Length: 267
Image (cartoon, rainbow, N blue to C red):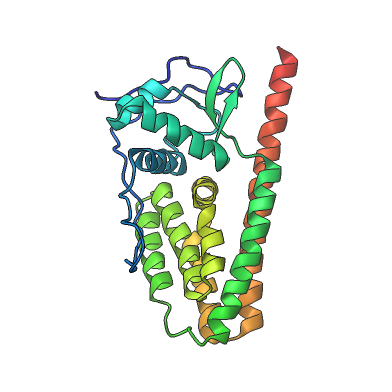
């Protein structure tokens, strides 16, 4: 089918109707599994896991937005699977905090609040500051290829006015930093919140690009700070970068919330 829409054009918060979404099939995450003697055979990815990953990607890309109602049968048809795997995927995504049930109304994509943004980006600031320190302490500043590749993608997306591509490259840049830190736990905590972070980065890129801010240059400054090998300079650069984004996004959501409240009061 060319697209699909929700059964009811309703949201938790009033907003514009969502446009139809083009075909997307569930794709599995890439995982590296090592066989070990004595272990039971590893099962392949289940349909429910693939459906959950497909929905995560739709949320991260903005094709499914906060406050949008999801209908199990339509998602199943969309992903060309039965309703059982979609039901299981919904359950998993509710546990992750990406979806929520609203009594007598259905299942919705969770809308991030200003408090959510501050919590997430405070965590991210701590992770990236520590990651920058570890990269320098472990003498990995000659190994910055992942960050440089993300920067190339960011320049390309910026030249084309592709805010979604810029957001994806932005996430790849910071994920590469955490991976390069050499701390598997630090990296795993960062990627655990990748859907929410990708949503925030895409939103931020849209506003910054519209305002004429050179996002690519900001990331060049971060990369240069790492290349100096100056731990304090790198820590400060990443901390300031994330905290400025935190305040900017939280203020934006606070303003939007106040605007909705005023509109409801006028009715």
